[in-house]
Image (cartoon, rainbow, N blue to C red; front, side, top):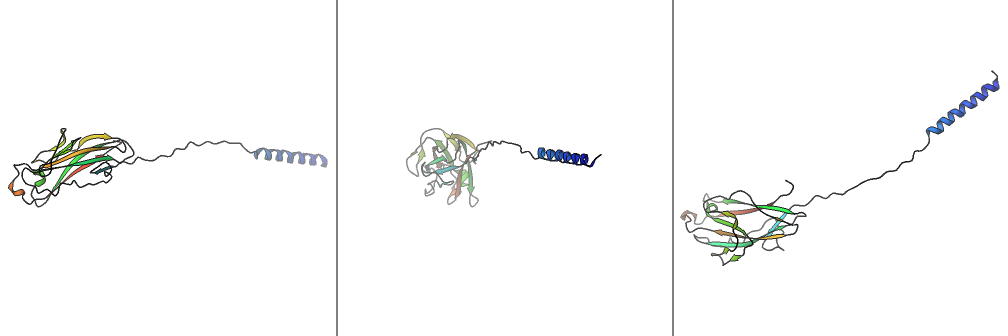
Length: 191
């Protein structure tokens, strides 16, 4: 082989290598798309108070503690439950008693909760008018379990009337006793 033919073959070989190198560096074209969503979890909360506009707190003291209780005395007050959530909220009521000094004044009390009622009379003879009780704790017993009340739209409220009574048959040893009666309103979604 001549020197010239070796040079031609070398030049041709370099051309093939350069051609292959050029093929491997070609750019690819691409396109992308993204589907995005932003999620905010619901806020679940209830407020209680004397009126719909004041029912924004998680606790409210029912204004009946100033009554001088004796057998036959009764007091009643309006309690407004408001859905301060961002979603429709079913709620329930559960009562509890905390007696002091070993005397069961709370157990001796009768407690009723009525919907759509108003207070009739004044303490110590105040009662809730209207509908049948949704909570009816009898004198001499503890509160029962939770009672489903209703479902409130976001921002909606419901007026309840709560009546506390000390029956005429109350025992003499209840004199000077103290008790704490709680009504716990619970809203639950997603179960």
